[in-house]
Length: 76
Image 1 (cartoon, rainbow, N blue to C red):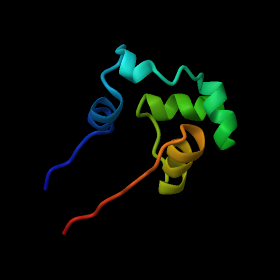
Image 2: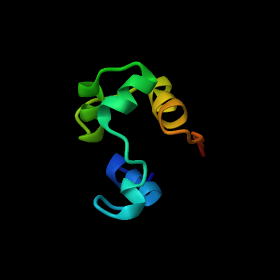
Image 3: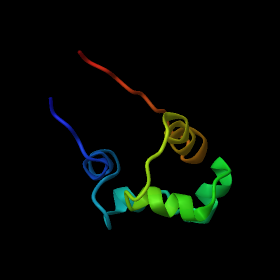
Image 4: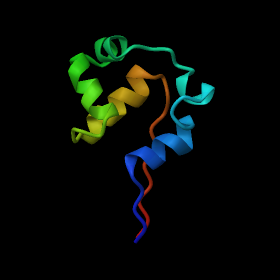
């Protein structure tokens, strides 16, 4: 079974840290937190891989916060 870290996923889909592709959203942690009704400190923990999140929270961040679409695929 291959596992992928959150950092690897972020690099693949958003580009590496510091690149224009990664920084294109130009949104503060506070703005994202407001959009998904969470505290800014929670967003900071998520960004720094310091906290676990639920699928609902992931959905909220991607769809409500960033305007994207979340697709999860399970293969057995």
